[in-house]
Image 1 (cartoon, rainbow, N blue to C red):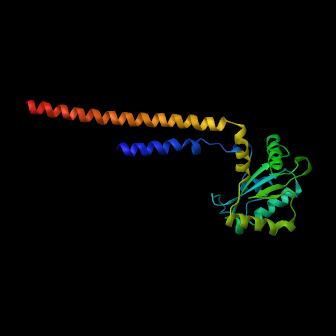
Image 2: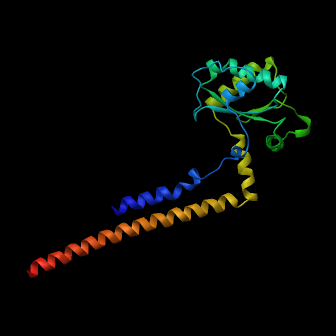
Length: 215
């Protein structure tokens, strides 16, 4: 029993790093493939489309009303039946959302682009950055980037950018230490409680045996 609770304690102690971790993009307004397609006035062609952890993430910065963004989303929609199992979309509208626009500037700068000299659509697949907008002549290049990344995953730009910020901030590490301490304390309390309970049962049993012998 004691060994089981020690194992449970160790497992629980590791939970905060996963359960309480907050992703960078959680602070921004984002849309998935279906939502983005609908925002551009289409219906998702792949009715069986679903997102999985194995899919390649395409990060897209777009402007509502941007013709080239519209064309790119239309393209993604058109290949969703054949390639939908290989990719998922995380899109940020940056023309009417200042918070998303700020993220666009940060990510573009992080990838070595000047936010003031590039436009949308700006999208990233693995470690490949598409910073020249979109035209139909790029279709095969995009499909190749999706398949290359699916077969040989390279990186996630949002995770890389978030990691680059960690040395400058101790907030996340403090939160991790705090929650680890809380869970360890709770786990230790549970172990002590059950150990004491088992000890009391043993003592009670011994006491009953002594009384029986006396009788």
